[in-house]
Structures are given as C-alpha cells and as structure tokens.
Length: 415
Image (cartoon, rainbow, N blue to C red; front, side, top):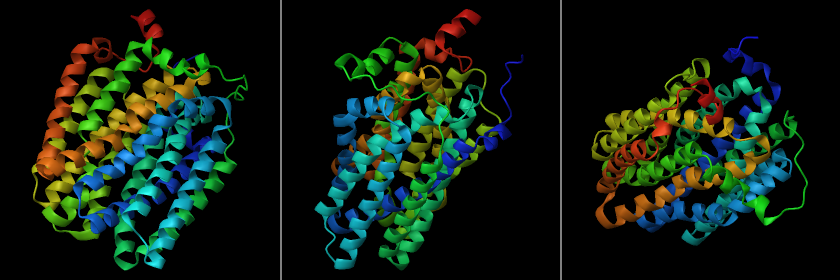
C-alpha cells in the first residue's frame, strides 16, 4: 500500500471536519470583532498604551491558573461540549458589552472584566479544539487539516476586523448583535460534529495523570524545542496590541484603518494556508520553520518603522504569511508526535506556552511602549525574534534537522 497522503480534496469529504471548520470560522469572526471593539474602547477611555497591554495580561492569567485543569478535562470529557460551552461564554461577554454601550455605562473595569471572562473561555476552547481536530480526519490528512483549520482562522481574522471596523463606524452596538449571531452559529455547528476519536477515559484524576503532559513534553526534546521557540518569539513580537496606537496616532487611519491593520496579517496567512492545504511542506521541515521565523522578525521590524499605511499593511501581510507556515509546521509536529490519550494535556501546555504567549506578548509590547514608545517597542520585539530563532537553532539542533512529519523514533529508524 502506498504511504502517499490523500489529496487535499479528501478534506472536503470529511463531514465532521467541514462542520468543525465552519464552526471555527464563525466563532473567530465573532471573537475578532469583539476584540476590535474592546481594543478601541479601552484606548478611547484610557488613552493608555499600558492599559492596552493589560488586555493581553488579563487574558494570559486564566491560561496559567487553569492549564492543568484544562488539559485533564480535554482528555477526560467530550471535547465538543467544552468547545461549545466556551462559545456560549463568548456570547455572554458580547451581550454584556452591548448592554453597557446601550446604557452608556461602559467603563475600563467593565471591559477588563469582559476580557477576563473571555480569557477563561478561550483558555478552555483553544487546547481542546486543537486536541479535537486530529480526531476528525484520517491520520494521513492531519498536516493538511491543520493548514485548512488555520485558513478558517485566518479568513475570520481578515473578515472579522475589517467588517468590525466598518460596522463600528456605523454603530458599536451592532457589533455586539453580530457577535452573538456568529457565536450562536458556531455552537450549532459544533453540536453537529461527530468525532472519530476514541471515547474519553473516565479514570479518577490523579496528580500524576494531570502532570502527564509536562512529563511527555520534557522527555521529547523536539516537542520542547518547538513549543518554547514560539513562546519566546511571540512574546517578543506581539505588535498587534499596539495597532490602535498606530491607527490613531502614527498612521491616522481611524477605526476603519484599524480593522484593515488587524486583517492584514490574516490576508498573508490565509493565502499561505490555502496553498499549504493543497501543497503541504513535506521535506526539510525544520530548516523551513527557522527561515519563516526569521522572516517574521524582519517583517515586524519593517512594520515598526513604517509611517506609510500601504507599507504597514504589506509588512503585516508578510508577517502573517510567515507565521502561518510556522503554525502549520509546529502544530502538525505536536499533534503527530502526541498520542490521542495525551493530546488534551499536551495541547493545554502548548496553549499556555504558545497560544497564551500572544496575550503575554501584548502585555510586553504595551509595557515597553509605555516606557519607550510604540515604535521602539515593535522594533525591539522584531530584533528579539531574530535573536531567539538564532539561539534555538544552536540549542535544539535536532529541531533544525527534522526532514518529514514523523515521530522522532520513526524518523530515526528511517535514517
């Protein structure tokens, strides 16, 4: 039998994955529109770069506190129920913000409370969704499914902020209504998903089982390298938190321009992920991952110095394209090297170190911007990303030498 993977068209024949893809599209549309509203309102109310950074920190805290609980829940309970509950919490946050806007009672503290609620839900949703995705397709399609799943995310990241910016200019309240509609759609779609994976285990939780994800990552150096590489790169390269400052004070393009700036990275990422779903990276995976991380840092530096709106959009698009390649490679490696019974716990740790590093990176960018200014903050982050990539190439030589999407022990046998 041939080891050749099925064609990309095979993904469209996987009904559970298609429903999951559509649910991801709808939920991310709502999330991105809500994030744009929160970011603009926080900066309007406080005029503070530090408070923009706090938005990221507040979302990071739940991931730190809940990591062990999240991972164990994702391996012990129905992952679809967890994702559906998280989308319900997003809808409640959108209703809360919309009601405050209607009552004229929107405040910094209320926005921060909404961000914390969203952060708790997202801390459960993201690692659980990552663990669920591989169970919806045959193993040969996992890397292509990751690319397609990324394309759903990036499509929403393009359309959500762009649509949100236009709608916000007409009526901020209408954004809340649209968000609730999107989250209701995602909840319905997740309900219809049928998983291929084995039934979750219901063994009594023990301290050792909760910590199994940490032990698994610690004993597999390639996984450790992949996860920590993204952790430090994203912490240093978190320029998106400062986009309201660039939109209002540096580029002078207003909320509509802010929506386009937030969408630009996703434009590059969407194009790239569509290509990867059809023509996946299959050889010299490790080397290519480091190349695109370096490109990510260079694009961040260009954006930081830019005072031209078109140049800024182009730099953000390149940043998104390079990040998309890195995401597909990294997430494919994590899912392929992790057995299903540990995917929830490993994905929770991966989210803590990778996914939540986006929010911690936003805090770092806001903190440095409050101290040195927005431009130095972004440029320093880009330089730091290049330094981390160079350092990790030396610290994890096995990561650089990865050739194919195969578990380390199998690749060793091939060699």
